[in-house]
Amino acid sequence: MNLPNQLTIARLGITAVFVLVLESNWPFARTAGLLLFAAASITDYADGYLARRHNLITDFGKLMDPLADKILMAAALLGLVAVDALPAWVATAIISREFLITGLRQLAVAKSIVLPAERIGKHKTIWQIITILYFLLLQALGEWAHYGWIPQLPYPEFFQKWVGGSLLALALLLTVGSGIGYLWKNRALIQDR
Figure 1 (spheres, rainbow, N blue to C red):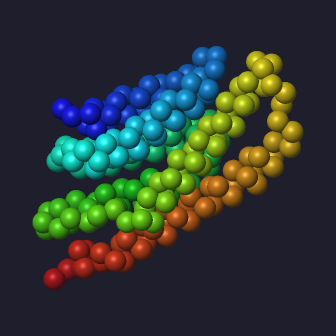
Figure 2: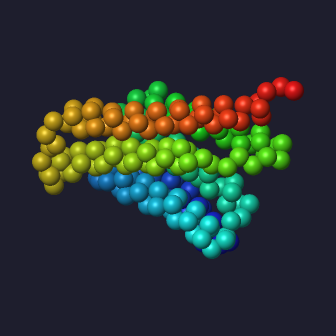
């Protein structure tokens, strides 16, 4: 198994540990969750970069890399919902989009058509990662303040509602917009003939 595929498998393992840590009541669990999500996000970039740069693209990687990405994102979104950092409807909208596009890609494969990722989809993923990292950072900062490492954040509503809300709105807009655009562009796949 080549290095990019090993990184994809590692991302799945990191995701499992991330979920376990985020669900725990351990001291500094939120901080550990932030670090684990950041590490998993780095493997997402690294495996694609290495596969393209060194021509190590495999069928396994084509299937498992996007699947590992979606599992990581879904786990992070659901974990943030569980700690009341995000509303459930936002996680549902983002995860639903990912399932719909995955289903469309599977339909295309069944018809021997390859649907490449689009640039807006890459931007969507970047903003989803930034948004999740931001909310995980807020959770970690709350933890650090609880243990006396830092003072409480001034104006917590500003950071949660306004900054976090703006990031969330952008990620949601890119997610839903790119999904609708992708479905529209490939609507011939789902039309009955």
